[in-house]
Amino acid sequence: MMKRLWLLFAQMVTALLAVLFIVSTFKPQWLDSSGFTGFGHWGSSGTITIKESHIDPSTPNPGSHHEAAKKAMPSVVNIFTSKNSTKVKSKKKSDPHQNDPWFKFFFSDTPESQEDINPSLGSGVIVSSEGLIITNQHVIDGADQIEVALADGRKTKATVIGSDPDTDIAVLKIQIANLPSSITFGKIESVKVGDVVLAIGNPFGVGQTVTSGIVSALGRDHLGINTFENFIQTDAAINPGNSGGALVDTRGHLIGINTAIYSRSGGSMGIGFAIPVHTVKEVMEAITKNGGVIRGWIGVEPQNITSELAQTLKIEKNGVLIVGTLQSGPADKAGIKPGDVLKSIDGQSINDITQLLNKISQVTPGNKVKAIINRKNKDLELEIQVGKRPGPKKK
Image 1 (cartoon, helix red, strand yellow):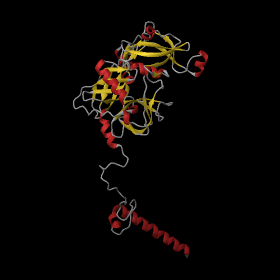
Image 2: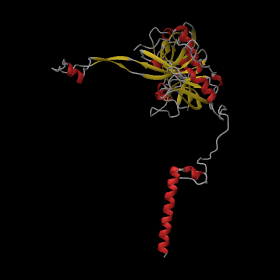
Image 3: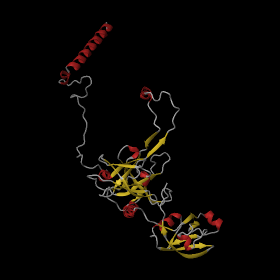
Image 4: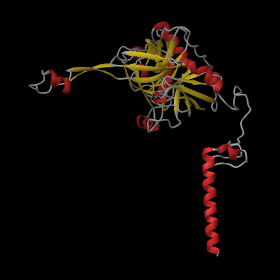
C-alpha cells in the first residue's frame, strides 16, 4: 500500500514540475503575477537588489592624484626613433630556373640588400610653447628619424636642437598646430624625501601610463650612469619606455626627467632615478642658447684615495690623487704633476672625483681658480686657468 502511495506521489510531483517548466518557458508572466520565481529568475520581480553610490562622479576620490595627472599628461609625449641600416646578403648559388617568371612567383627573389628599420621607443615632455621637448639623450642617440606622438594621438616629426651626453639630456623641437600646453616647472627646493610623486611615460609601448610612489632620496650620485649625477630616487614604477618621461609632484609640476632604473630583471624593482628639474632647465637653456653645454675643465686624470692607497703611497687621504695630466693642458701648465693630491679648489674641499668634476665644470672657461695640492707632504698653492671641457668623441 505504501509503495503504491509513494509511486502516486512521485508521479504527481513529476507532472507538476513538467507543468511549471512549460508555463515558465512559454508564459512566465503567469508566474510573475503570483510571486513565484520561474526557472532562471531571481527575486519576486526578476531583478537583483544592489546598493549604488549617490556621490557626484565629478567629485574627486579621497587621496586621488587625478588632478595632478590630468594637468601633466597632455604635456608628455611618446617618442619613436628609427635607424636605417643596409644589410648586404651574399648571393646563393645561381639556380638555373631563377629567371623563370613562374619560379619567381612561387619562390620569390631574395634581394641583395634590404633596408631595416630598427624602432626604438621612449618618452618626452613638452616644456615650452615653441614646441621644445625634453627627453633623454640615449632615447634619440643614433636615430635617423624621430617621430613624436602627442597624448591626443596626433603624430609629427621632430628635429634635434642639441644634446648633452654628460647629463643624458636632449632637446627636440616639433611644429604642429594646437600644441598642448607645456608642463609647469616645479622648484627642486620644495621637493622632500617622502613626497608623493607620479611618473608619466610609455612603458613597454603599452601607451601613456601613470604610476605613483614617493621620493626615496635626493642627490644620488656615484652611480656610474652619467658623468654628472645628482638624481632624484623614487620607487614609482619606471620601466623601459619611461625614459625621458615626466616625474611630477601632486600639483602636476615637473620635478624631474625619468632616466634610469636599477634592475636585475629589466623591469621595475622600486629603484628609479630622475634628473632633477633645475639641472634640466640649466642644460636646456645652454643648449638652446649655445648649441651645447659649456663646462670648465683642467685636463687631469683623478683617482679617489682609499685608506689602503693612502697607506701604501704614504699620502694624505683628504683629496683626490692626480694620476696623470694632459700635456699642455690647464693643470699641466699650472704645474700640477702626477702623484700630487689635489685638496681644494677656491677654498672648497675636494674629497672625491665627483666633487672635483662638479666644482670645475661650474667655472667659466678662461677664469682662474686657486688649487691647494699636497706634494711630498707639503701643501702648495697653484693657480689654474680653466679650459673648456671637450665634447664627447664622435662614434
